Image 1 (spheres, rainbow, N blue to C red):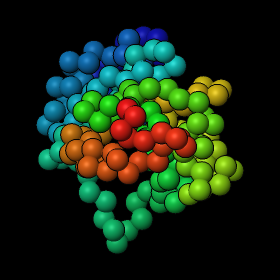
Image 2: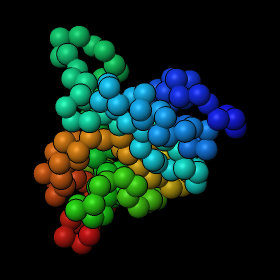
Image 3: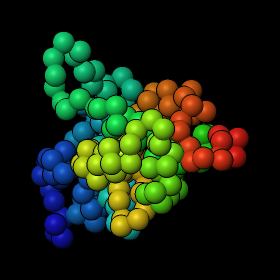
Image 4: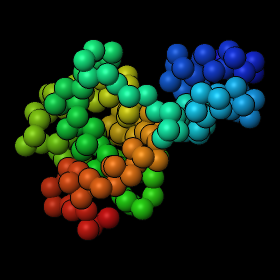
Length: 177
């Protein structure tokens, strides 16, 4: 995807892919297109390159109907492993979690240990969390993904209230950050 996309195509591409290279998009034009639906493009980094993803504002963020399954359900391993990655990568609770600090995969898995097995945590990292854009993996390093860049201010506020409860590597506490 090297050529610049027209705004409608870019909006569809970012929705389909989760994030697209910023060099392919007129961000202002796509934001004008998305604004009436309460969304906007925000920057994130993937594989060292600036990308764009879509963020909802707090007033228009979708609510999942609990009576219907509309997306894959997050398993316990998925949730605990993501909490561990968040606890390891998000070092300053006054800052937004994204982009955070990259950490070793083993460090993130160790933070989840006692709650979920190594195999389940590694599987969650390699498959569901990376597919959801919540994490990005590079051989032995994990960082927060483009989906975290798209968290609304309300979601980030809720996470801040739980910051001290996020799993961290052995010997580390929220006060260490």
